[in-house]
Length: 408
Image (cartoon, rainbow, N blue to C red; front, side, top):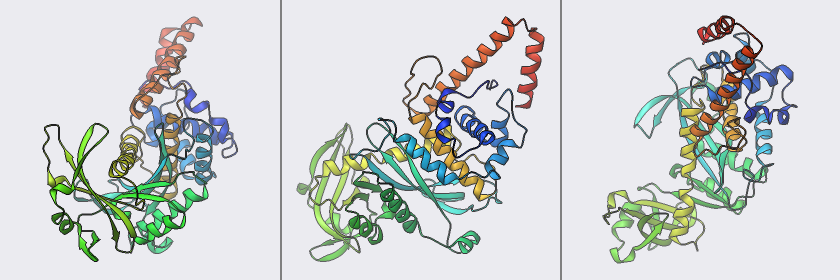
C-alpha cells in the first residue's frame, strides 16, 4: 500500500459534524481511523497507524481507541443524525427494520467478552463475540442503527454486568428504534426471534412483523397446535398456488392460524420452483406475519429485503474490519464496532468518493472502498509531482518513501 498523503474527502468532508464529540487531536485520530478502515487491507491498529506519510507515534491510534475520553454512543447518535440530513439515506415510512445477530470470529482467548458460540453457518462451535443488531433498509439504502453484545449465561462478564437473553437484547433495540422516532412500521427478523415477548412488544407499538418459522414450530390447525411438519402433510397439493417474486417462482400456501404465545398470524408455506420447473419439497420455508390480510407475494417480497443485513455483515467483515480487531478490552472493542458502522455509513452517503473530480458510483462496499483508494492514489501521485516541481532530488523522495514503506 502506498503512503496516505491526506484524509480523503469522504471522511474530511463530514468531520466537522462530529466536532463536539472530539477535540482537535482526537479528531485527527478519528479521521485517520476511518480512513484506515476504508482503504487498508489490514485493519489492525498497527497497520492503519503506519499508513500515513506524516504518521503518529505508534501508540496514538491505540490510545484513541482505548483511553481517550470520547463517548461512542454519542458518536453513533451523531452518525444517525448525519444520515438523516441526506435525502438518499434518511429514514422513510416505507422502509423496514431488520433484527439479526452475527458472530465475530476471533482466535485470541484473552479478549474480554469473547466466548464459544454455535455457528449455524458451519455447524461448529467457534470463539468470538456475538452481537445482536438493528438495521434500517429501503430501496435506496441500508445501514446499521445500533447493536447489543450478547454474553452467555453464567459467563464471567454476564455475572458482572447482568445476563440478558437475545430476545431481551432485541427488545432493547426495538424500543431504541421507537425512541428514535424511526417512521417504520415493518420489522423482519430471523426464526429464533419470533416469540410472545417480541410480538407483544410490536403489538404495543402497532408494528408489523414478518419472520420465518422453524419446521418444528407448532401452529394451530382445527383447534389443536401441531408441528409445521405435520401441518404440511395435511395440505393438499391443489391448495398451493404459483406466484412470482422478483425473477423467481414459488409454490405457496397461506392460511390464518395461531402461534403459541404469539397470537393470530398469517402462515405462508413457500417452495421454490427452479428454472426447469422442478419443485423440491425439501426446500420448504415457513413464514408468519401479524398482518392477517396480506397476500403471500407481498409477505415474501418484504421479507426478502432482509437479505441486505447479511450483505452488511459480509461487507463489513471482508472490507471494513468488523471482526479484524486485536484490542483486548471490551470498551475499545465496542468503540471499534461503532467506528466500523461509521465507515460503512460514510460509504453509503454517496459523496465524491474517488477524489477524481466526479461522482463515482459503486454497486458494492468493496467498489466504494476501491474508489477511495484511487482518490488517495491521486493525492500520492500529486505529492510526488510537487516534490519534483520543487526540484527535490529523486533520491531524497525515494528515501522518504522507502523509510515509510519499510515501516509498513
